[in-house]
Image 1 (cartoon, helix red, strand yellow):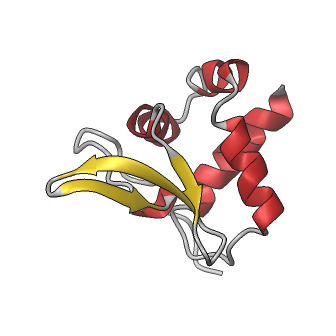
Image 2: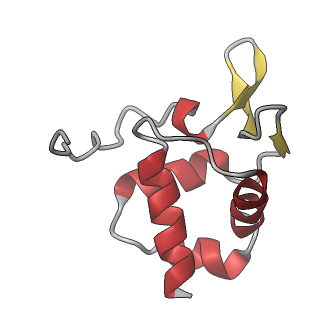
Length: 104
């Protein structure tokens, strides 16, 4: 199960910086992981407040894969439902800022 947590943490970290998009298979697998109660339960216990906030925000939101192979979540927005990638989902204002990463 530790590998699942690592995958969720890596995906959340990837959503916070510019990276090439995952393959369609990776996208589908990640989407399935977000629906596994045991994976989500363990991820919510991880010491990563931004990951926990993202999981709360996504919750049971419907998922879809767009034409560019992006996994999108249908979340409520100010003007109705929005279809957003992980890196586009706004987190609550009380969520800590991302840890600064050194430039490559």
